[in-house]
Length: 426
Image 1 (cartoon, rainbow, N blue to C red):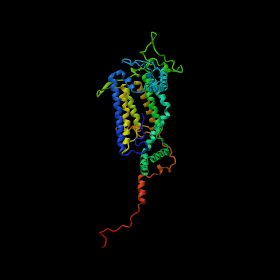
Image 2 (cartoon, rainbow, N blue to C red; image 1 turned 180 degrees about the vertical axis):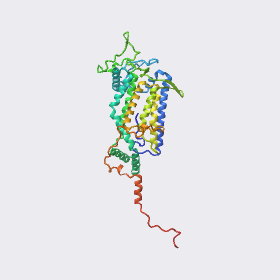
Image 3 (tube, one colour; image 1 turned 180 degrees about the horizontal axis):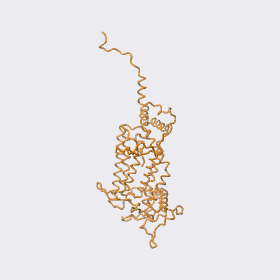
Image 4 (cartoon, rainbow, N blue to C red; image 1 turned 135 degrees about the vertical axis):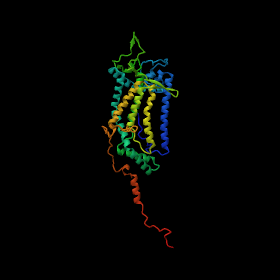
């Protein structure tokens, strides 16, 4: 999940005023509560209406995928399991949603062809999802490493950046543009780019939604052959679909076997239902495992606690609470999506461990294990050499104690003291 790097900075590079900080903190808390309420309502409504139709209810508010737009317009009657459907490319039309689905089809098709090819090689859909996830993460390895390094460097520069911002506000009172330009010059001098970690976060979130549709629609289709063909060439010929029974297509059996160890990865994996305030939530063990790994991933890159900084405190709280929102989705998201989530979180934890070590993972509830003490990462983050050292505003600014010494040296001592009234002769 994407991490906010500049919780203490507003849009123009200035520190938020004391009046704005409480508003930002309450806005973040309100956003978190709204997301939790939305997840509870969506999951509870889906499970209460039809326990087997959770995935259909969750997908109703999302962008239709390539398979969803090509499906029949008639609504099938609810059943124990969703009826498999053929998987075809979407057709562009006057409807903006159908046009968006048409543009989305190449991404959907590329991911599904990769997943189907790995399934044909391994014969196990869980292994295929894990291998596909690792392949995607290896292709984006340099981008994700750049994101981790950028976040760590910003944490190292955070104390100096706060002091610099105060100094800039003192020098350029009311001139927001000058403060912004000086802040950007400071980043350039230190060789740090504030936007270096944006692209990997956007890419990771951008792949999450196509992966959901690939697992939801691709793994429940009895005939995905149209999506496996490019210019009339079948890219996965070893995948024999659809299945026939007495010369008739068996529409009740998906092309890909999605049941592994008794778990159907194409459907939500629910251990039991939990009623909370009138809503029924499905409890999933895979959702709990995914949330736990996301918590470890977020805590390793959590910024250190700063005194008298409410924005940093709010950021730390959000990084702890947001990973556990995925527990609420376990009742209606397919289990295969949590396999992808668990794999990508585990990969990120290993990558972060090599770059930042345990980071801010410990102390946890006041406990620090022996193996985490004085640990040095394999590839520690180093700061680049400053450019134009000694000439920039950041290098020439006075520290608080230096300003007091400079002010004391410029004050003229009062050597002509007049005697008091009581000691003066009349």
